[in-house]
Length: 445
Image: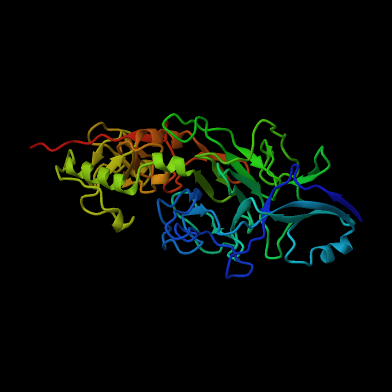
């Protein structure tokens, strides 16, 4: 057995996953849990799962929720690479039997494995994300289906890893957050089997990729009114950045991108092959609209008393407290090809074009006719602009800048496909632009 010391270079820093009062457990804290009396907690950032519009259908509960804050823990719980072992496979179980010792195991062949052990690091906190409901997972994420049909329970068909990824946050300013593929299991280990993509780096260390990979996209220009989508990359177990593989689970890795890093930025997207998460920094969230602002915009839109141009009935956006149930009588509806807003009516059907196809009575364009719903997840909005545009074909309403940004942002789907999708419900966008400007008619009196 060969023992090599590799304390820092090219490897991730990880945590011991301990939480006070719960051995082997690690949960994300909410504001107030970590702060001393009279002090505000230090927030590293927030993760928002696309497709839920502010809350899971069954309600946010514990570690299973649509949005979660990462805050500094009461005590540092990080670990960092310490030594690397080259061992024969029969010795693997003995080497990994100590649950208090974190390690990453790279199986190179039936008779050869490399194990990297870790030691305590007082400078970082780690948060783990995955499908598993075990205690070491801080944020339990399940598959989100296009169109808002979220799979909130366990799924035998899930493509999200039980231990998908981990985020390490520096405990000192500027509180940099870094993402790494794979998370530690109940035995405090990460295993990369013989079939997993893995390799030795030029400096003699090991690195690898998980089965379906962890993809990250950093927006160009930050997450603001001037944002533009960036390029999707894959993050390795050690936090290095690579171009995408030919398919999601291909054994041949992409090319190393040396001028890019795994540091999360405001607006960074994290795709876990089944769910996509948005990272927002505290500074970025200060620029985002608040729930109070969104409610004020709803009331202002209703105060304008928009009318159906045919039925002449007054339209009103429903309160978010109602949730997305069946549309009410005053719900505004839109023809998503032209943007003309009406009240609900039963005429204009073009069943030869499909059950959802209607002909707009104002301009005669034929297309989907759907109810309008206000986007309620403020963290998905680029600016506090008025709700002037709707995604096609789902009808979720937001500002123009927000609509145009998400309409041109391709989100990973399956093993190698990409589709722009509504961030509020996950529906794939259609039409030339993916969104439409809403055309309201004011009151006639």
